[in-house]
Image (cartoon, rainbow, N blue to C red; front, side):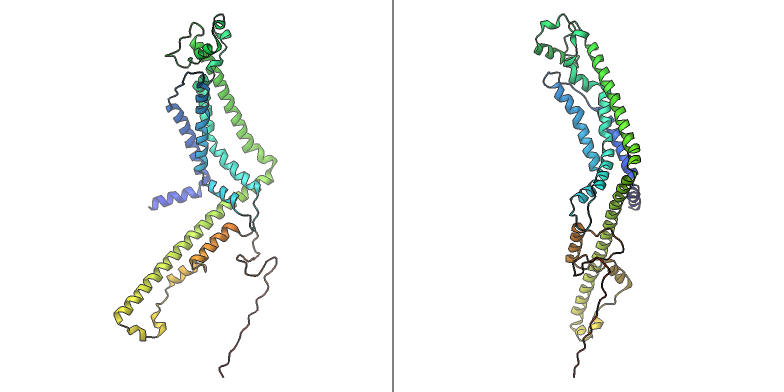
Length: 344
């Protein structure tokens, strides 16, 4: 268990490197998935384009959503987007920065899938086999003798060598080489454009908007760290709350058992002697509770954190629960009134 805890703490402290590694693994997995995928073109005029478009677009969409789901910052972005403004305004620039950071990593695997698909050429061959210029690449003198539906049905069988029977009109190898050449050209163009776009986004953009970029990056990191610290504080409070609750339960049960065995002997003892001595450990656990010692107070604290987070202004005390002081300046001094009662 200690080894797993150390690994978990290491992943938490190096979350960015961990997410980059996950994105790289997903990119390799997408390429391996395509190589293991058995591409079977239907070889029908009405289905070739739909099947090829589904193979080209559906898996990248699934990989993109998986990349977002595996990113821990998705829930943080959703929480920051949907929370009430309260006394802390929401900065759209920070939200855009968080979303762009997640989207850049999540797009790696889909880009790899599209690039591998285009470079392989099977999908492009299946989709555009009916658009091959027969008059240029084949026996154009025989093409006018076929109706458009018959010609489309014949050319749709080009990706399927077992059922293609149109060599008298167009050699299958010529059509395959022609379409694969175009597909590979599109694939390398896609790789070049995505690489240039990534270079512009990662390198050139911060140079023109450096101040805004640093501000968005800083507050994005702040939101992430604040959420982690709040979760750690809640976990520590929950542990202390459970520990004190269990200790009180055992002490109460012990007191009841002593009362039952003594047959009322403890009832004649002074009230102070029945209370157990408070140990240093119990006092330390009570200090961790920070005054939140009942379920209603915990629920009110969590609801207040969600609806009205504290403003990002350190050193200025403000009322969190609306106890009558509106803030806006130094807290006025308290006046203590002592009342004495005479027994005479």
